[in-house]
Length: 170
Image 1 (cartoon, rainbow, N blue to C red):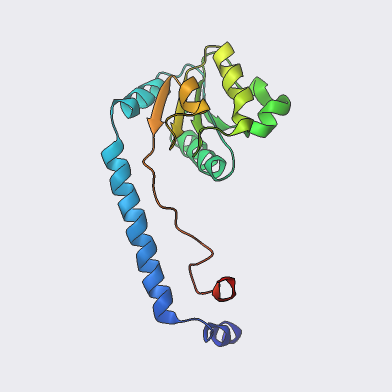
Image 2 (image 1 turned 45 degrees about the vertical axis):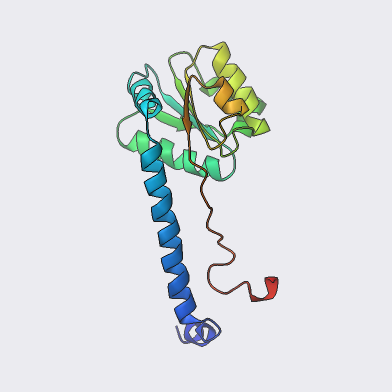
């Protein structure tokens, strides 16, 4: 513990608290904008998931994939059969996870992630309903989605510049 205390002298403690508060304000604003953006597409997505005859298949690449993995785990833990499939792995042999009777839930910030194309095409060929969640309305994902949930454009919080560890980056 003593070593951690010694290293803390290199940080501006008030700047850390101020930055923590700023991050919370940014996230609170993002949640308020997300709340305001909910509409009938959200209801349609909930109804499609509820009506799933088999399982909810969730996918996404990068940070969207991390979010998707957590969403799939939460659905599974609350009684909705669900599985996460990595879109790059899907394109290399794991598409068999998706079957008729499923619902595909796809997360993508841009909606144009190249790795999503194979799973979107495959789901479409099986007539699996696709729920797209993206910030870009004019995108591959939103064009292919049966239900499109458009996220508001929000400011991302920079982790690198959070605690003064970026002093040499300017």
